[in-house]
Structure formats: structure tokens, C-alpha cells
Amino acid sequence: MKELFGMLILFLCTFSFISCNDDNEQTNELTPKALYQTSWRGTGHCKAWTVQSMGIGIQFIDIQKGKVNWEGYDEIDITYTMEEKYITFNSDALYLAGAPWVIKYYTKNHITLIQNESSPDKEKIATIELEKID
View (cartoon, helix red, strand yellow):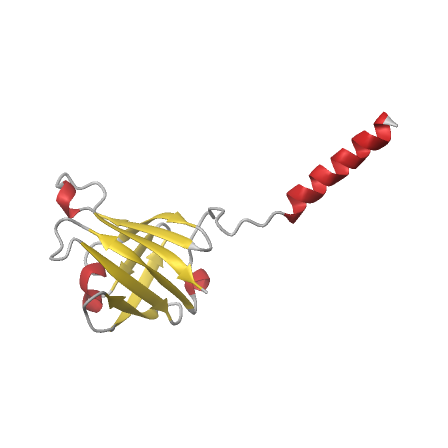
């Protein structure tokens, strides 16, 4: 009887681990293919910006083009490139432009980007937190 009970518990534990699906599990790498036709919304923060904290929406149309909506600004067409843990936006992308952004954290539903992370001037470090829009 103990063996049957033990087998039942083992089966239930195994089944529960197999059936888990965590959409917030961190993945190794963000790719243009993963961004293809997705939309994200969040907030950007930087003490050096005119507005230190503002809403942002990004739509990735294909693997190189998209649109960005900064709170209080008109929609901007953007292009972007990705290399390993870095994403770089074209110069028209307003606050996104300039130095590459480090992809600090990525899951299927969340992205954290940091720019100028190693700057000795802490006011120039910019962070963007984005959540995927379904």
C-alpha cells in the first residue's frame, strides 16, 4: 500500500512540474524574431531627461522597424538593430537614440533596458521597464 501511495505522489509531482508554464521565466536572449509584431507599454526613467519619468509604448512591426510613443510626444517611426545583449535605436527615436541599450532582463512578458549603466554620472543612467500588451 505504501508503494502505491508513493507511486501516486511521484506521478502527481511529475505531472505538476510538466504542466507548469511560466510566461515570466527569464529567457537567455532577446532576438528581433521574438519582438516581431509585438507591442509593449511601460515607463522610462532618467534624471538627465527633461521629463525624468514618462510613459512609453513601443510597437515592433518587423525585425528592424517599429513605432514609439513617448508620453506627450507624437508617434515616431524607428529602426533598431540588436547585437547579443544590446539594442540600438536610430537617431529619430528621441530618448531611445544615442548609446545602445543593454537588455538587462527579458521574459516573454517583460523587458528591462538600461542605457549608460556604467556612467560615473548616475543622473545619465536611463532605465525603461516594458510589459507586453496582448
